[in-house]
Every structure is written in structure tokens, then in C-alpha cells.
Image 1 (cartoon, rainbow, N blue to C red):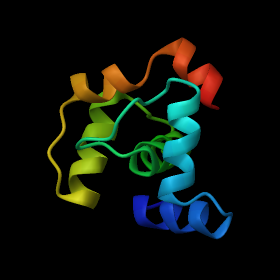
Image 2 (cartoon, rainbow, N blue to C red):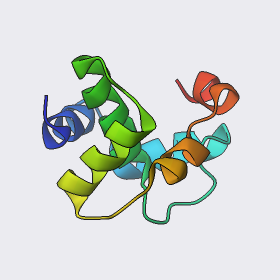
Image 3 (cartoon, one colour):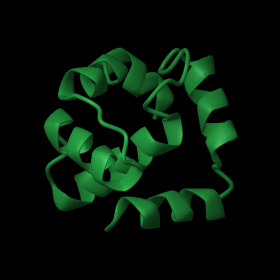
Image 4 (spheres, rainbow, N blue to C red):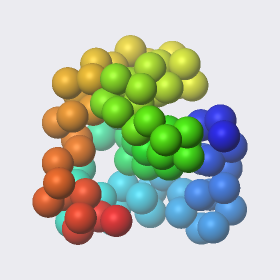
Length: 89
């Protein structure tokens, strides 16, 4: 499943970029959005999980392909810690 398809699915479920950022901010998952937005990161994690390989490197590559924003696997890793993910998801 392509990242854009997942993003459209989330928006159709009422989870637009603003709502996802608010949820991410409330639980400490994301305190601000710079290059990586909440909706892009969640869409990426879902799309890569469907493929069965949701590694930080794969998410970084997927984000770059879909958004033309270059991110590193370290930048993705900083956003995804076990405690923060548990609260967010």
C-alpha cells in the first residue's frame, strides 16, 4: 500500500493532519513538526507495517519518496520511542 493511499484513508476516517498532530502532541509523541509531520509518520508506519518491514530506514526512505523531504533513520528513531508510541497508538 502506497503512503498517499494510507494518508487518504486516515483523512477519510476523520484523522486529518491537524487532529493527528494534536493527538501526538497531547501524549508527547511529537512536540513539534519540522520535516516529519504526524500524519506522514503515522501513514509511513502503517504502510511499512503492511509490507512487514517497518524499520526506521524503510520509513525514512518511504517519507523521502512520498514527500520529497529527506529524513534520516535517526530522525525517525527520535520520533519513535516505545513509551511514546504506546501512548499515541
